[in-house]
Structure formats: C-alpha cells, structure tokens
Length: 272
Image 1 (cartoon, helix red, strand yellow):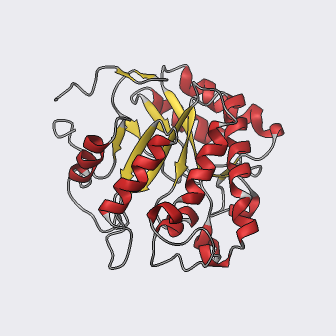
Image 2: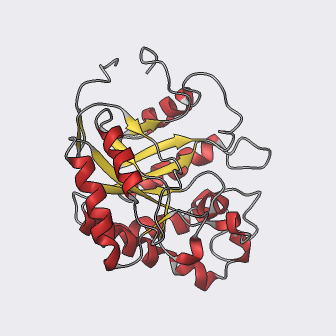
C-alpha cells in the first residue's frame, strides 16, 4: 500500500502528525551534567516543526557506559527537570520524542567478552531505571540501541560474541540479554509508554548475524512486547544511494505486525 507520508500515522499507543521520523544521531550537545543543553533543546524544537517523531542521540543508563564526551546520560531524578524541558519543547510543536538508550561496549575499550555475567545481569535494571526516568520526564517512549557495534550489537554478532555463558549460542541465546532488558522495561513502565528498538537487518560480514537470524530475533522481540523496530545494518557507513535498507525493511514489515522504520539514505520525498 502506498500512503502519503505527510498524513498522520496512528499506532497502538502513539499518534504522529506525519510519517517522518528523525533517526537518532549523536549531536554531542549535552551539557556538563550530561543533560540536554539549551542548544540541543532549540535544535530539537526546530526539528519538531517538521517531523512526527524524534529519536534522541544515544543516552547512557550508567556512567560506565559512556561512549563519548557531551553525550546524554539519564541516571538520577535530579536530571528530570532538564529532560522535561526538552520534551515540552518538542510537544509544543505537536511532535513525539523517544529517548535512545545504549550500552557502550568496545567504544570504551571494553567488549562483550570482557563483561562478567554478573555485570551483564545489571543491565536490565539499569535500562529499566533509565526508561522510568524518561517516562517521568515526559518522553513518549524509548528506543533500545541494539545496533552499530555497541555492546548489545556485539552480543548478537557471532564474530564478537565469544562468551561461554548463557549469552552465547544461537540467535535467541545471543539475544537473551536484549530480551531481558525489554522484559524489565515492560514490567516497569506504563502500557502506553512506547518501546522501540534499533537492530541490524544483518551484520553484512562473513560469520556475522544473518538476515534470517535477525528476522528470528525481531519476531522474538515482538512476542515479548516491542512496539516498533528500526532496521539498520552493520555496513551502514559503506552504503550509498537512496533508502538503502528499503528492501530489507520490507522483509521485516512482511514478517512482523509492529511498525517498521526504514533508515538510511532517505533524501528524496517521492521515494519515501
């Protein structure tokens, strides 16, 4: 079905003024307290005039998961005021906003294999706490970052995951930590709070996660209550052209009943 991307989009727990979604990008505009600076608030407010949904740049749920300087972090109630200001600015433009949450991994020289099982078991509670703070601040939902070689993406990739515990094996074993995080958040937030995820359709490298595995993982996320999914890929830095994950996104859309976001090279309005 071909639809007008400028018209409203109606989901189970969210209504968007149009079909344009601003995918998460690292703006490096957080202040010294790792909350949104006024510059970032104004930037999102300008975006909100045009797009139905904004997904923030990545946010850490624990200082141990910091990826880069001037990165957002949401770990305590004292930060709620600054994040509420951001959400209110976006909502005034009749747009919605999701907070993207990430665990850093090898971007800070610690890989999935360097974490103890006990350390990984902490992540569901850290993510759920961050999600609860996000809901208190007025976010419409969160996005779980399972892509782009960060820790949870490494967990899914057989080339990176050489663990010997319960988080190694087939795709559902490698994805078990992601499911535990999703389940912990679902148990902690309200039913109307939107939970999305960003996932590789494939790692596009020999021995990496395949398209078939990713589809299996996505169906498992849906079965565990995921509300929407954004389809990226392990080779996103090498891709060129228009809507370069479109065909993969179609496969996911045909396999799932939740909304699927198509990211990557979306520049031409007619193509979109």
